[in-house]
Image (cartoon, rainbow, N blue to C red):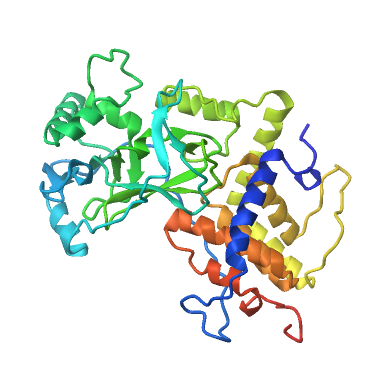
Length: 433
């Protein structure tokens, strides 16, 4: 029997904490009327729209690089400090393409200083990243060059692959070699031996395809970011910037001082707890003990049900767009909730967006493919209803998440600062107020 419709749920403790924290941060932004780039007086500001497509973290099964020569290249050339040095396994011709596309590759970058975190022993998972102060969604937590970049799949015998990776490690600065040898290989119970392939498979992140290699993708191993542990309700997101050849870890939920920074290792956090546990044990050899996975009984059943609902919203975004359009065609009515014979709420497009966002906060799971479409509907709907405070708030949240996922607000901050100047304000009002 499914739990009661989420529309009738009381605010969850974690939901209240997230919303109030984001609201507090956002209010300092929305009260300012300073114009940003592209916000000339009287200019109509468009509400951004779009979705992000997150590639699966499952490793590809094949590669079309058979017969191509592999080589180890160090970027930048070995003249800088070890922590800025990356050893890259490249196929012939790829280095030239990188330099052609990005003159001066890799470009310089800046990291938060001092670092807002520390790496400490966190118990069962050994090392982890702990916040030293409050971190706001959208803020950069860490930015660093990987120690290693390599193809996901190398066309060679397993023993040959191991020798290739050993050679890569041997080519590194001694400081980088020593660090890699401290990382965990969950399949290897003999801590006295070092298996490069096992360490890399346990600790690597997927990165952008490199020029000249668009078949199976690349993966990278970082110093501090590879210490970030998994959660099915993560508070951070990892991105890769090819120009600077850096991993960037940014907050997607408020992180309090003393909280552990976490990232979701799975391609999706929507499956139920049992399915998530099975996949994590198969791929990484551990049993997840995050807040979502520690739920039992009815609480776990509800969480699984809510995540299925969120998955349906992700897959059914076109249908939800049509429902929102129908709400507009009906004149954007504000009606009291209607409960059907099965005890479920019959929701219009705006109400569905509101319930979906509330569920994201309740589950503390902000899916990369879902958040912007939902917040865009909320901003547009409340603009039509001329609710300035809600437009400011939800556009501010969207700006923070856009910074977390892309590094820029993509125009959301301008909407938050100027709700009455957007192309959706009073859209159905004949007088245009």
